[in-house]
Length: 202
Image (cartoon, rainbow, N blue to C red; front, side, top):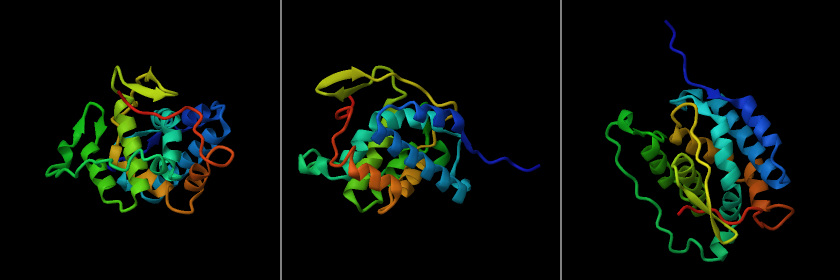
């Protein structure tokens, strides 16, 4: 009997959801990220450990795309926002099969993967999405938008979310010179000026 490997799910729904994003820059960035994540899976499908819900990832990206842009174009650094940022320390995972919780699988391994990156801006971008995937599933989370704390509408993927696969795929998508990274760094219409304000959790 041939074992069926996990795959990317809800792709058509995700593309339909992206098409409804009104802000051009945000929509284009997310389109490019999703396209590269699909390409990464096509290249290395065995790296995925759980069916990967693209609709859920798009929901996270919609709330985080402006933060990704400001992490990658350096505006966070210029504002001194993460001069003293302490990145999460790597955590030993002696039994990878135990690295799961109600919000997904391979979470600690995702943080460990982020810790291996040498580029500070990339580490902030990956941290933003790993944290975003967790907070999106947590009832009562809030994000900062234009100086106000706004409740985050919680949602859950159809299958346990593979955090490590997301980190690896987004790392691939954010390679220097790639389309997604170039568009994120350019900002909407030129210099980065997030449409939705800075996003954080409370």
